[in-house]
Image (cartoon, rainbow, N blue to C red):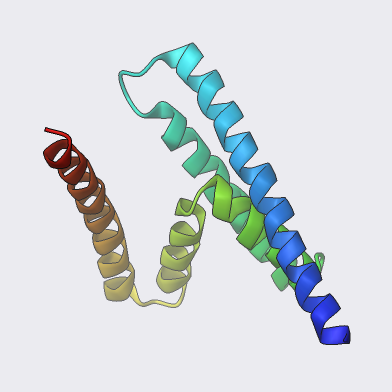
Length: 133
């Protein structure tokens, strides 16, 4: 029974963090769009930068045992930042590869993430455009 409660708590942390992250992303996006307009994806850039910064802080706070890994990683890292932006995880992965001296893997990770995500977005747009003609 303890595992069920523990698992429920973990899922609750992810859900709570996700709801907060998604809501804050929407709020910030609306603010930035109203402020800077739609000419460039500043809103996405802003949340990606904030999310990456927050992921870096969280990682170090957990590494230095200032924050509890099971609670804060689940609530903030997976839930909040997972909904706020997935770019934060990509940034941390790339940075850790660079810090480990694996420049080639970091470069491949960066290239694949950027190019494949753009390609996937283009494919999704193409599919909808094609299906709605």
